[in-house]
Amino acid sequence: MDGAKPMGIRNVSSICSLTELDDHDLSRLLEKPRLINNIDRQRSFDERSLSELPMLRVRGSYDNFDSMPSPGVRSGIDTPASWDGNSLDPHPIVAEAWKALRRSLVYFRGQPVGTIAAYDHASEEVLNYDQVFVRDFVPSALAFLMNGEPEIVKNFLLKTLQLQGWEKKIDRFKLGEGVMPASFKVLLDPVRKLDTLVADFGESAIGRVSPVDSGFWWIILLRAYTKSTGDLSLAERPECQKGIRLILMLCLAEGFDTFPTLLCADGCCMIDRRMDVYGYPIEIQALFYMALRCASMMLKQDSEGKECIERIEKRLHALSFHMRNYYWLDFQQLNDIYRYKTEEYSHTAVNKFNVIPDSIPDWIFDFMPMRGGYFIGNVSPTRMDFRWFCLGNCMAILSSLATPEQSMAIMDLIESRWDELVGEMPLKITYPAIESHEWRIVTGCDPKNTRWSYHNGGSWPVLLWLLTAACIKTGRPQMARHAIDLAETRLLRDGFPEYYDGKLGRFIGKQARKYQTWSIGGYLVAKMMLEDPSHLGMISLEEDKQRKTLMKRSSSWNC
Ligand code: GLC
Image (cartoon, rainbow, N blue to C red):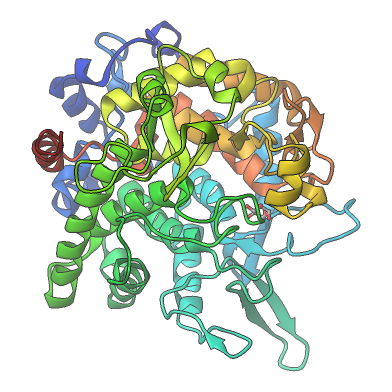
């Protein structure tokens, strides 16, 4: 066991605020011996990104930065490569998880290019769980990066970039050039005795929806790779620059939109079946925001890049204003909506989207604590989806779409609604479940999405890494510790299921796969991040100070 473990994590006060963190603490963290000869290149890559390193440093909590392992360098403990079995307290699941993660590796012509969604031989139906999903690979990729194994991530990024270049068609309709696949598969051509690829851009997917999140995850992962390795050359390659621009062209095109949010079909993200997430779902908006910020850091200031960066900046400005104002719900805001007048016309309208107070569901009045808040699921004309969604809220914290105050409030809410959102297995994908008649209408009677199962209020272990990252960023690692402890009582014994069912997440999901790779990767990432919080920098961005000033001005102007 090295000196990294007892870093005072358990002593960190849960009410520390982001503003308490001082620059001195940040600079000390940055002095860590991370890939030493890369640090200067890293600095020139993005000055801002340096200040994005973890914000959890509560005064006096981390006295020993210099002995902390560096990101992109093997974590030191808990990895099969370095764990000798005598170290203090590496949980037995860790070694098993690494074994399972490596077993899920997919090779293309001898090189690892991804991990399959699930390695579940007992399951009678493979469906597409034998494919490499872009979104599913993210936790695997982060685990490999944190363990100092970036090659597979690089291979994955390049392989999926190639796939983006394919012509994509559904029946006679051609999809946008920038669309990234939901998943791909390596097949052996028996004649040529050569590996070939097949990809799915939505044309084979159940429901035929293209994955809006894939492109955003690709950009986010490219930045994580760059940040972790200090290798700028990958993001700077012309084909990567083009790939980023193509993804953004799909989202930044001007049209009939009246909102800066991105309009989507149901099932276009992690929730890839009909679940009433069509419109402007929080998951996509938060990923969009994160991807825009990552892209603006990686795009070169050449003529094409410059124009793109300008459009990104304008969109980020409008998007953060819209989200922070119209998606945010806390006790006060709920009370305001409850008292809304309707049918207001003109610029002076308070109830801008004409939400009818009678449409507020009963459950929210009990669920909303006096202290705390969150970004609701969706906002569009006469519609507010009040459901809580995990991925969008955690990503809002990590991308700093949420203000520091909002980030704290989201964590307050999770803390005070722990039983509902975490229960016995972290973490509810959404809360609450849709039942009875509403379930029939909303899901189209989907038997997989019955109440408290799968996407409809099921508990997904993969979300543990997002919760852990959010906890670390907001200075509440002990909350993550608690969630990880819960997961560790069940995960290995249950064979790393895809999801759990029930109000408390007590039962292995009805149709859950076992050895679901992102449940395995998500657990490892959570574990490694808690052990070495500097890993957070790969996946977290600090608030953009420049935009903060602009925001303040525009919101006061608006009131
Ligand atoms: C399910 C999930 C989706 C995931 C896929 C592969 O369809 O809803 O988010 O990517 O399985 O694991």
